[in-house]
Image (cartoon, rainbow, N blue to C red; front, side, top):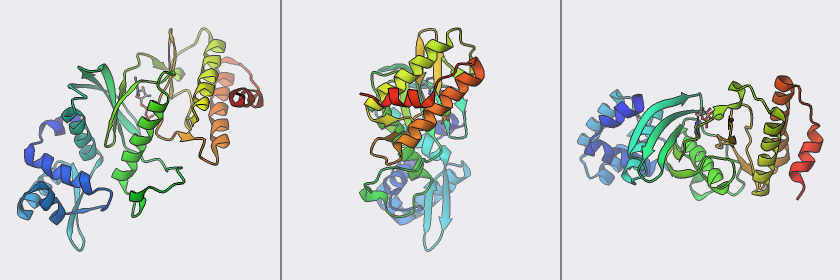
Length: 282
Ligand SMILES: Nc1ncnc2c1ncn2[C@@H]1O[C@H](COP(=O)(O)OP(=O)(O)O)[C@@H](O)[C@H]1O
Ligand SMILES: [Mg+2]
């Protein structure tokens, strides 16, 4: 419940300071107090005192180099991203933690606009496969920038895949992505009665995603949810588009993961080359 507790302990001045840090994250690993002070319209002394409090609460990390600077921790960036979601009217209530992995923390939440949904806070940055460098990409790519990109990549992929067997995506702010709650279990947790059908659905879905020029990049029994109605594919931060030179290698690895799982668990054998041809053919 850490994110929620921290969220509750915030106040107007702290939000102003965090707004300023967020604004300059792309340009500085540690945002100078002087800039925060100007942007937040608070004295440098006041900003320093707020930064000390935020640091005690594990929301920021402060560093003295040639200047005093500050950067978000995972908790701080997540609390701030939640704040942006709330401010934009995307979320009205946050509920229980549904899962916590190495790469993300996922909470159940409620939105008047979208109903029951989940908010996923990213904590790992995936390398970007984009060839065209973005204007802001120079300089050191630190934790916050990487996790924000990873959330953006997941949001963009899910939006691109709207209508397929993926959660509907509602919003992206900072390292957080808001999406539809899928009431289903991870594939590795269930004993399927119709494994052949499910495998076919997964292959067809991979093909449908390929037709929209997206490859998952981390497809496995952990990122496929199933219930009696069907399958859903989740977890897209590392997804790539066909612009990536090595797309075929990633597609093959995804297919291989799935085929291996169905062979090991259900004794179903399919030739990987046949499946690859099937996915790639128009
Ligand atoms: N849209 C969703 N609906 C229901 N459960 C979800 C959803 N997104 C994530 N989860 C749950 O949270 C876990 C972690 O999410 P995932 O996107 O796979 O991130 P990670 O990179 O940490 O594996 C999933 O295994 C699943 O149990
Ligand atoms: Mg996952």
